[in-house]
Image 1 (cartoon, rainbow, N blue to C red):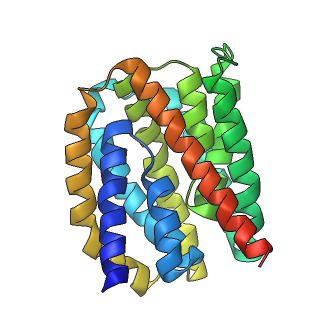
Image 2 (image 1 turned 120 degrees about the horizontal axis):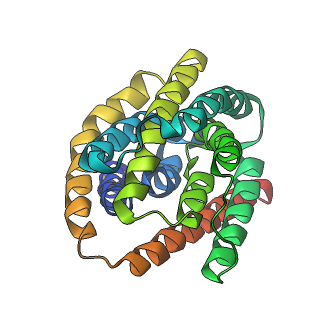
Length: 245
């Protein structure tokens, strides 16, 4: 009973963060659910819910969607999911979490400190970011950080940020789900949890979308980076706890 309530609360908070920022669902949801059903099952559950939540946010921000502009980034991301699914199957999730978390925290701290600037060769940079996002989505369920940092660095408005993030991750999450289904990680148990939690998550997304209009642009940017840092630290701590009993 406590486990189910924890999952419901995590889903509601994750949906709220998703509705406000356009991202953060897996960053909030996966660490909590991992403690309840294990990391691999949590990734499988999150990928399906992530696809549906991104579709909802994309609908909310559809007027800012860039259309075919993101197509190269999306295509490379789809290729990246195959690598990520393989890593999840054979590699240590703990090591992945520590490495990913450390890099993400350092990059976010640099951006808060004012280091960085708009990348002019955006299509080239987005290719590398797209591959990393796809690989991390399938491997850890949390492919958002490199994509988030890239879009924040480019200075998009709140709605443009949400639209681009969701447009990228709808097909990438879908492909990741297909690969995870083929390995058995996505199964009846994970799909049952998806069905039970989806209404709660969508409720959180609706509430978060309404709160978005009350958040100033600079505060939004800081909120995004703060969530990324917290999520990165959570990944590092979880990975270290497994590697150092």
